[in-house]
Length: 210
Ligand code: 5GP
Image: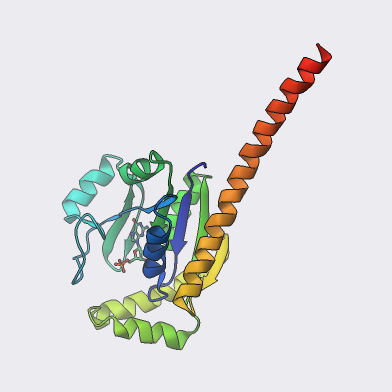
């Protein structure tokens, strides 16, 4: 299995983080969640080194200048970035790298790498999106407004993605994302298997003609 980057993006409140984490839990042997760095404050229950690497802004900027990030982006006034060390840690274990990132970061990765598969998660309706956002009591109103504005822009980016998953039913959405992973695994395996068979056939053919 050749590891690839599996990017999952969505407008805020579409439920993508839950889906991404559930997929990593369901397929620990084939996929692992890339822990991003961010300058935003931890939310209640979040842990440094598990949910994010929480960095102070100068530390983030220092690491960015040093070239530690595969990509980075600003979102609602905070910086977020994918650490190259995370991508290496996961690919060197032979697993796919699951990236829960916003659309600008996904664009930057598309410019740099070809070994990626991207999925955009949509909420089933605007009403559900708003309900989910309001349920997150910890997001202050000013940030909520800015996240909604950002969501409008992010919907436009959906067409840039390889797959769209509608998160109406959480378990079904997790199954859909897992199906994409399985299908893409077959794509990689098919190329490898065909190559191995061709090489073997060539050996057999050359022995026959000798
Ligand atoms: P939140 O603050 O709600 O955890 O995340 C805000 C947004 O930042 C989400 O859309 C999330 O996918 C995105 N994000 C998280 N980590 C990264 C990252 O490493 N790079 C980029 N570009 N976006 C990220």
